[in-house]
Length: 155
Image (tube, rainbow, N blue to C red):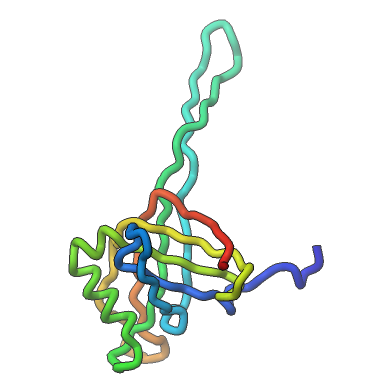
């Protein structure tokens, strides 16, 4: 493959939902207010057992662990930057925290591009913090957990 076939996340499109499990969830664009997305987990459990009369082990694949997603959301108090406050309010509300979703398209929000969706629980969204030197934009790291991450193609 040519190096031009690989992507960066500079064109990524991110959305959140406070009603992710609904038949038609509402997705809110917040890509202009986010700085990174990280996905961990999803690894598969395994069981190993040593056998009598044999020098080998039996290995059995188990279920997958949950995925953890972390999104750095820029803090703002400006009226035109509603994502941080909406997410803070959702984090304070158990009902919204339990039906939370993140959806992202690494190549951008264009028909035919791959898109990933995770619906689950909003685990953490701390209040603003930072250093006194003022050289960093304030972010809060949103952390959610989802049983699966689904892939589809943007229609």
